[in-house]
Amino acid sequence: MNLEDYPAGIKEDIEDQSLEILGGISEDIIVIGGWGVRALLQSRHARYTLDVDGITKTRKIEAVGKKLEALGLKGRRAEWGVQYFKKYRPGANIQAPASAVPEDIELRIEISGPRIKEKHTHHFFEFDLDEYENGSIPFHSGKGSVPVRIPPAQVMAAVKLGLPADYKNNFDAAALLRIADIGEVIRTIKTNDDWRDVVIRRIPKLIGRISMSDDLAHILAVNAGIDIRGYARKLKEIEKQLKL
Image (cartoon, rainbow, N blue to C red; front, side, top):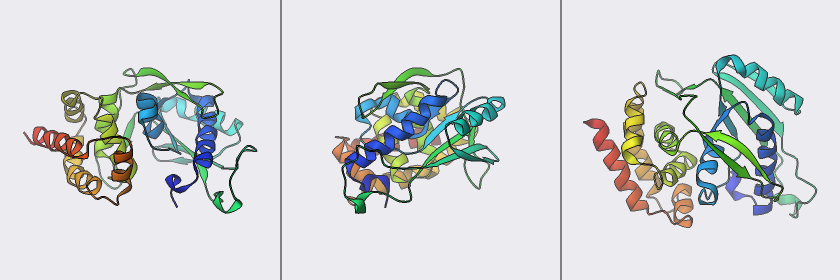
């Protein structure tokens, strides 16, 4: 069962608890991943997110980890940075049958240096830590918002197009390409190592999966009012330009 399958009240509670953790380290990181897309798109980011993904200077990773430990999270080191976890426990205000409350959800935080790598290959994307925008992410509970720093839309779109073509990355890419300048997306891809090769390899999968009516990315895109054929045309144009 993925996050989208739970009742709205539970999903919002999970997000608020994840956002509470993010608030404790938001001054120390640039937020990427689903929360980064949320900050850029706000209510147009019509999907729920769980993990907190962030980047910072490599020398600051340990200090961020200590803050997370102080918030009650348990962590472990990885080759690329640190991972921290905290079991989700429903808030007191949750109104849902016991059978609908998840028992195995963990709030996950992953912090790395500015270079993120594709698993099992040499491909990587390197963020510029000086290239970011200021934004904020509101709590569902209405108790305010968390200020964050996020990469520009064209950078986030470039990254998402090279990541595995699961429903989250596919939907996020489609949503980001509604606001990002395609020329800037292409430039960003071309100036990042050989990320171009990764994106070219992913694009047919992204198009194929989001075109399937039973695919979750397709369903989310339709619900968000995204023109799927228009998204496919943009992907084909990006692919064409990257092959030149």
